[in-house]
Image (cartoon, rainbow over all chains, first blue to last red; front, side, top):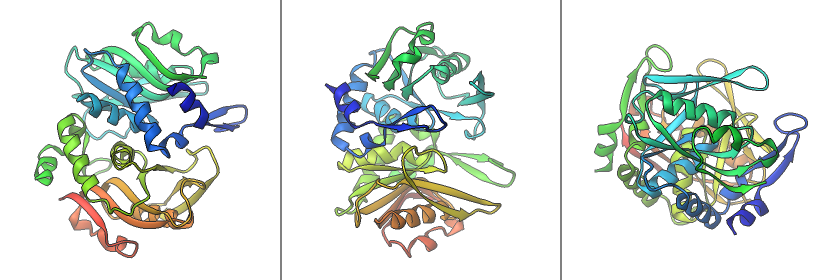
Length: 174
Length: 174
């Protein structure tokens, strides 16, 4: 099972990035190209047939986001932190535990009505994925689903995302 | 020619990120999965047979860095900005035009003596690629080469990199 394979190599790092957080380190997956291929197979198998584009959230969502899009023959849309995309952008700001964050997408990144699947490495509270969904809508697209490698079940991040799409893939809930 | 294909879609954005800079926007490449595949073919064809791992520099070096490693069946090593990698890291600081920057690699990212190819999207002055090379050496690896999608010829960034390896691929000098 891909879930067991992933969880057997993901590294738990205590107190990162701050005390009390148990960080899930996916870099050991990247060390294993055969596992990376199987993970990509599993992500690709879960993408609905009518999806028009894959959006990946900076930075770790870039890792498997572009290969996923290429595997499916779809455009890849980078969602980046504020001030990183050079062309005309659309921005969305959201609340964090302390302060707020802004993410951006190029205004011409997708065609009106196109169905976009949002990819990131990890689903925690869902705050960033929700912001990405709002951004897709703001640019004129539709949210066709979400895909994550890991998902922290205790944080119940899926709950807020079902408003946008019930198609939520988490390869390895943990 | 892949060079012409790339340059025909890369977008020049004036005065980004600051006045006087003509930024090369690679996001239109990502919109075209067939072009992305041909670009990846060209990057892969230029990697020497004895390379043991591909290192990609955050964030845009993550885009084609992991697919390149997977295509070649090699481990992928993320090089990140300071404070982003959760496990034990090795850091390298370098001078920028104003101030300085620090990049990091996990201390256990590679085996001693392993030959690492460094990938990023764009070669400008070469400052970040040079820092990545120093980091590879600091962690115990050897620099097997560099690979870039674009290279700004007027900045002569290749010059500083030949100290580390003469194997420097730039798909589209411009």
